[in-house]
Amino acid sequence: MEKITTGNSDIHDQSPYGRVYANDLALKDMAAKPRLGFTVGAAIVRERLSEADSPKPNLIAAMVKGKKGSNPKANDWEFLILDGSATRILHREKRGVCVECHSSQRSGDFVFGGDYGSEPGRR
Image 1: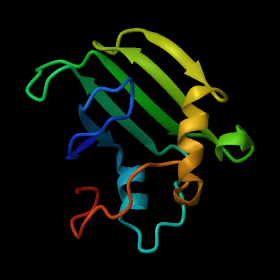
Image 2: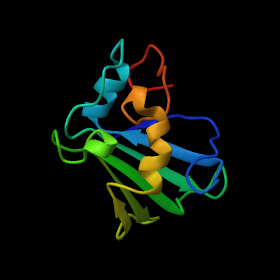
Image 3: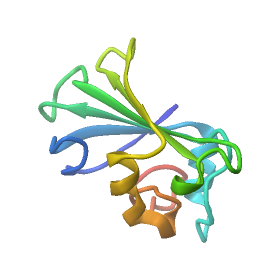
Image 4: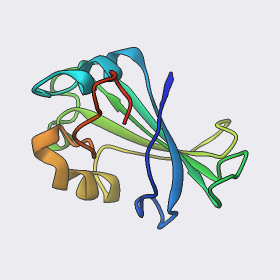
């Protein structure tokens, strides 16, 4: 996965710091003009950090695009929360708080962010 640099954000448990990564499928879809949606298998991962310079995340939030019809309520995305070492899935959902929040980004296929700049996948 490639790192996408983001500024401070208040999402994911109010932590203002984080790093976002995306696999090649998601990077390609993010760079598309116009952005039409994400390909099955696209994955976006956000590390939640306690401080801007934290070497390790507290938690990891991930979303993975599933096959058509796998989760119509969230346009086929599945959401996962993992521990900071990515060794244990703490929460997995197709409905719930993740979907409720990301549904505000329905026009962007449930993905926050818009213009990722001229270099594919980076902002």
